[in-house]
Image 1 (tube, rainbow, N blue to C red):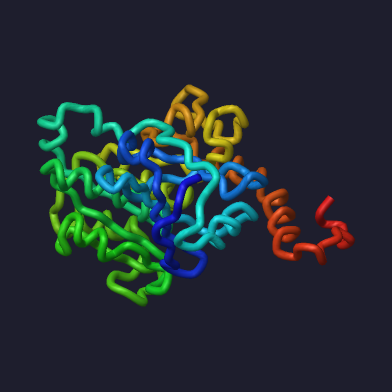
Image 2: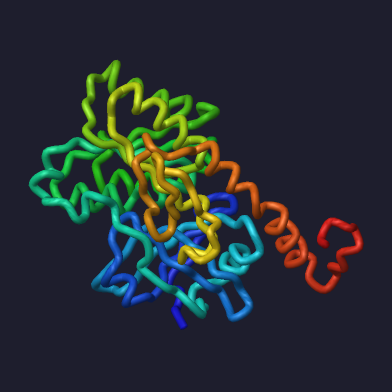
Amino acid sequence: MFKILEAEVLADKTYKMVVEAPNVAHACEPGQFLIVRADEESERIALTICDYDREKETVTIVFQTIGESSYKIAEKKAGDSFIDVVGPLGNPAEYVNEPIEEVRKRHYLLVGGGLGTAPVYPQAKWLKEHGVDVDVIIGTRNHDTLIMEQEMIDAVGEEHVFVTTDDGSYKRHGMVTAVIEDLVKNEGRKYDRCVSIGPMIMMKFCVKMTRELGIPTIVSMNPIMVDGTGMCGACRLVVGDEVRFACVDGPEFDGFKVDFDSAMKRMKLYKSEEGRRLLAYQEGSTHHGGCGNCG
């Protein structure tokens, strides 16, 4: 059993939990993910690692409630436990295994969209702790959905964090792509690498912008992962002229080579089943399937 030490609500349907997981905490690196199972009857949920503390032997996860199993996880409180926390899985961010002297020569731009801000955080912290120049863009729908702004400021400094909201309710107004363009074209900032994590459509257009600006870009394809081991085939995607699997070959890939259109189509495959399972879970003993929509 894996004890939950802290549990809090960050925003509507967005939760943060700190969990005792010694083996994961000692081995994980930025970019990797883990698999959580709430109880014996729950499915396996692949979640990116938001933070880790090797001394306290804890890992932090941030997630949104979407389907039945994520709602089960969200119902857990501090003091409760998960039956499984498995990891770390996937490959670390590419710079983790590169000579640090080479990494320090670069200026990184990290872009987090919505929930993607959470897995951007350990990358920002790692880079800053290793003496690498880094700027961070956080994009979200509005002020109410903004997460982890202060944590990001504490990690890299307020002057390196740029928040933008779709509706203009907080800080800058507009999409992350507008901020990228502004930082490069109007403020004269130069970036050697970009890491973009967030909704698929955001990463697609982020890559479109960075390609125009000539900034090599890495994207995390964790949004399409289901099983997390490569056995289900759900996270199959085309990268360049190769078929890859996000969970075992990634989750990070060269954004210039990812076929986002086919990946977004794959994301729709399980939505109907996910919705039926969630409805049955929410209705409990009153659920009978008589509406004809649950099979």
